[in-house]
Image (spheres, rainbow, N blue to C red):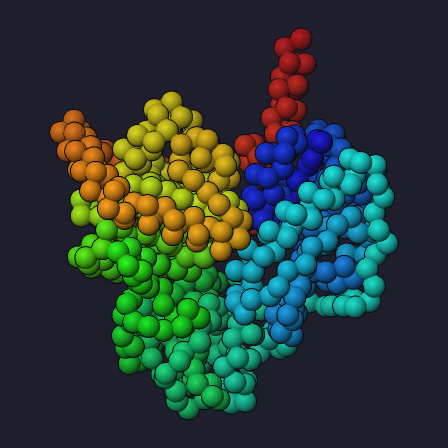
Length: 572
């Protein structure tokens, strides 16, 4: 089918649907819902069979949905209506939830139902549910809805009143009562607002929005007081314990009103808080605040690094590098780099860079810290290494993964192996070495010139990854464990390690790693300090969530086609 994807932004769900529907053979184009006139123009230019809206903040114009079928992806079960579906489900502690694909009509979320999919809820952040359970359910429901339309079937009547209309969640309804709420209630409120809009609260007589909540298992104090800090996060006591808050967004400071690590947002106000030590090898619950965790199973070491939104600051890179070097000193044979459940890595921490006194200097420090980590992985001659991508990866995060000997991905993972969307950054992380050796020079040029997301099957076909499984985590973890065990076996390990050492010696003799890095960083220096401000402008727009003013041509194929047609008419 010819499908126009209408969306507020090209978010994780939209990217996954784009990848899946393209794989299914549909002809796709994208338009952002900037204005009704822009939407109508997109429909005129592309003339789709169907409009699919995976993520909207504006209603589709009546002149469009009355003329052709428009399907809405709603993150709620049949009968649920309203703009805060997932927020309410988390806040109410729902055991299960769903996704519904319904036809657009005048009333919001009240049209006929084409398909729906149910899933079990996890006690995690809204953003994590959205990127995993909601996305998987949406892919399944959208595919069934399209198949039903192609088969000439009719949609079902709107769902019953099990849930009905649920209004937007106001900050007053999200507010935390630190004297009365227990830790479970506090976390539900934080989880329900994660990503957007956060929970408003007062700290040191200043108003912030709180994000990224985690349970603390040992500390306690007077309810509402701040009792500790650890690697950018702050710990706040509840009625029955304490929770960690990883991210804060100043509310009243328009110039600096963007999300960042809590201690960075508080500045000197957090300096007197006691420091809570974090040992990556300590045994603690996976729900607690532990960005870096290390576990061993026999002769295999698993290094987990779960950084918020996949962003890696200079300090986080340095801590991860220290943990990796410690893992290299262990008497194991294989090191598996697990990343996090939502993201493996997205490269530099743009929010921390934006908050710095000199964003150019902060960018330079950050890229060098990632490069140091990538170099250590590339030059490891004591172990075989696996990058296990449970979650999405983008920009420098993709190429950091390619530093490993073997790259595996969950089948639902989306990769963005390019830098161009961030102000035409050149990129580093030794990509000029690791990418061509996997894909060949021509494919490497094509990938770096592109801007579209890539799914796991496509990534394997291109040579970016070596295998995939899933989409559920259990199937992927089984693949990782199996491949790690094979590499660690007596039959495989010694010959593979010898081949790795010989290959590295040959490559180093032909073209030293230091030379690749020097060339890349010379380009990056121009991006950070040169006369072209594109990177700084793009970073500012990204961090401050500047509204979209247009749809880029690499997404809006209908505008490329329209431009070509107009040019041909003019020449004629």
